[in-house]
Length: 217
Image (cartoon, rainbow, N blue to C red; front, side):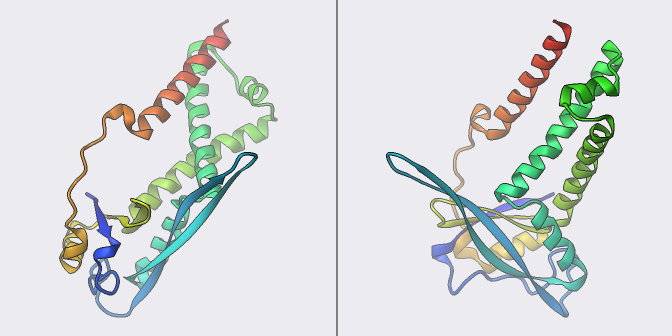
């Protein structure tokens, strides 16, 4: 199981204290520094224009050489920047179209040519797109399991850093090493309809129903 810890940066004494061992395997010798990037979206506007950008911050934490590389690759795949967010969106859209195609194939005998016509591309491109979705999904699942330490985001105007740890014992030692900064009162749990995933699932479901309706019309 994983644990998410909120670190109050203004309560730190000289920076974040990391346990002196690898968070994946517990090794203590020859530790390397892993650099994690946290991308924050920024926006400014005036009467005639809107400017949207990104602000990138980074933190370093120790890992053994065996797990440092995989953790860095995993963090890159899960990064919150625009490019990776769009790429992950394409992966999930491809998965949605795969499920839609399978449903239509068994329910209405839809063919791959029909799906290619719907997407506006050729048959080979359609197959490549569907394969991309499944390979991308498996890669993202690997990344979530390989990111033993994953800085998620800044909250409260950058005052608090949210980090996810896969190793519970490492998370406990991390909180002990940064006791002043991690003793934060828990905020009330958001209602399900205020969580972003609820609306994402709702939109995907509505899109699926709409496609089925249009095909049957």
